[in-house]
Image (cartoon, rainbow, N blue to C red; front, side):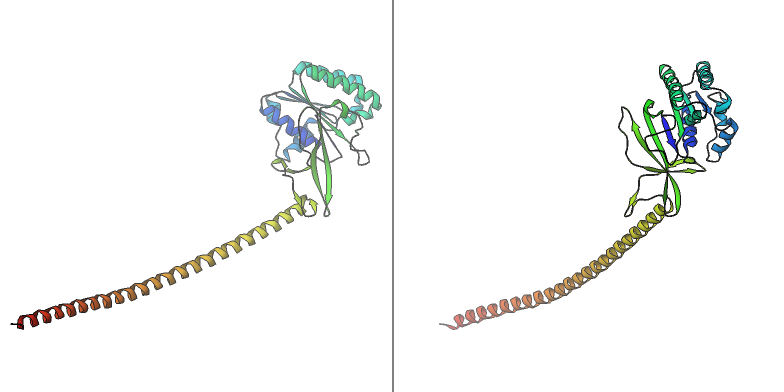
Length: 291
């Protein structure tokens, strides 16, 4: 795996997270650093919440620090291969590959790195390499021309927007597997690297404070919509209660009118029955007078 990018984009931090993840799985890791000492690397990583010292104490992680100009390419290669065969790691980190350009020309560096990559593959060792690129270099080019030898290539880059600089990461290629084509913002925080979800606003891909402002605006709009929905629901509930009260009153009034009407009807029916009975009694009485 290759992580390339300009200075300050977080390549070493990614390599250190890779090392820590492997050590947590109980895998052995060799970290070849050609720009800083082991103590400097561990000190820098503590600033982002990553403590590598326990893995060193457990002999899961070994640092090999050297200046690129201290020896030639062949000596560097021999030293690295000797360390790999001695420690028998599952993962090897080289930070950065581009430092070898100061020792030899591009063709010599390419041949040296090809031998290193082939040796790691034969030993079934996973390699994580970083490479420093310049702002003037094309996206497909690195100083050591190592990219064609690598199965997975991550590109870390600066993203400048709204007067600030943020970091972005995306997979440029990954042989034999599907991968996302999205640029993901990431931050170096006191708790380590935090990878952000892809975010596209009305003005395109947003990062940093512009993203935070847009998200705050959307949260405010969402809160306003929720409050409006709440008001509408209360208004409907109030109208429903008023309607139900009105219906209850109408039913009560109807029940009262119905009761009064039924009483009148009952009284009329009683009167009719009495009148009928009176008529029958009178008819009976008249028949009684007949001789």
